[in-house]
Length: 585
Ligand code: BES
Ligand code: ZN
Image (cartoon, rainbow, N blue to C red):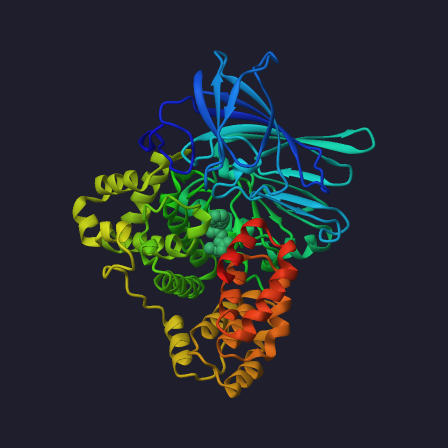
């Protein structure tokens, strides 16, 4: 097997092999004590003959044809990053049934005890980037899409959700379990294959949207996310009819490692978005925007991750500007720039600044290990640069043509480059310095200059260390101000901040986190109790990684960080544990 025959370096799938087109998936009988789940995956392919699937830590029980006769297969030795290669020969009728079992250390599953999830245990998946292979043997590459039907069997009293357009049935099996069936008629890649099972209830927001949450949160969630129909209307106005039928959201347990995950028809969201002030809606706008940029038009490999995230931030900002105004979009945009700058700085210190190239080609590692705001901020700025050169026709002609051309398909950075050259002209791409954006580190000189008055006001006040007075200070403005205040902050400054905003008690975890970061960076260790509270109360990596990293800069901080991590670790998701371990190492 040579490298060149694998179109996606993160999958064992080889060019020309039969590709999956649909799945019939049966899961359930979760063993929460052993943290294992049995599954049956019935795959249909577009042809017959030998092919490769990806798996990591799965135990294959049997592989059969559609008549139930056993098929031969081979499982390779584990390979770093990729996992194991499963080789099968697809029979003439193109169907293969795989009976398997997951392992307790599956990187794409988090199992939670009953006390965490309101009296019932909870289990859920996180497939992106390459973790789906730990809960289903699959062609785990975003270049291949398939439709699916699924059934999920859960203990009676629990709900089993699958991220899919159609909920078909719930059937009670005796006194112990119930089985829910789902159908997904729109093709999606493996990283979007998702489920959650737990004590979940729902509340309708509109005819095509509902929130799912644990009972104690559902009312607050329905209230917090009541604007979803407005966001959808703005999205449809900008990008055309919503492509996936329903759009629901599921409020996850606090350990969820991301702000949101755009699982199809049902975004998974961190519960910390529920603040009462609606400040989490830009994250919902982001996950919703992925319905067009990511789920409909998808990066074909993880080196093109910026096509998912850069386009989605671009789209999110348009939606936020349409619904909440340009100031809100600009403030969020400046916050993302700040996150990018910190990531770029860390990469620089680690000698990995090359990772700020949009297409860096560093495929030897797990995409999760090189995650940064590069694809988000720089990807979006690249698109803004093209937009500023092209004018209104970028949004009016180029974007619809892009979405139309690649709908329900995937593309690489190279394909995007050729498409943009054809549609926008080589002159525009040269004027933008497109190849610098894509293949060189850092932000090219062609980036659009920001001109937001509200951002400038916050920047000026922060630079002068002036305490803001008067006017309305949104959650995002408060956070931006805290982020931009020069370090270290004097004890007097901290006192004034507390008097003005009381950031340590803000309903927004974003504000609390920025404040605690500023305190740690100023060696103001009186806040350690609050830091511990935050580190134990959330599993979102966006907060954990920088906080743990900031703590390691002093002896006292490091000792504290190591103790808290040792104690909190078992409540974090496997990917978050790995990320924090890397920070503490
Ligand atoms: N798709 C991402 C989350 C993700 C990325 C999971 C890579 C696994 C690997 C999601 O859409 C996202 O970008 N979430 C952001 C939201 C923010 C930009 C508003 C997050 O969690 O921070
Ligand atoms: Zn995203």
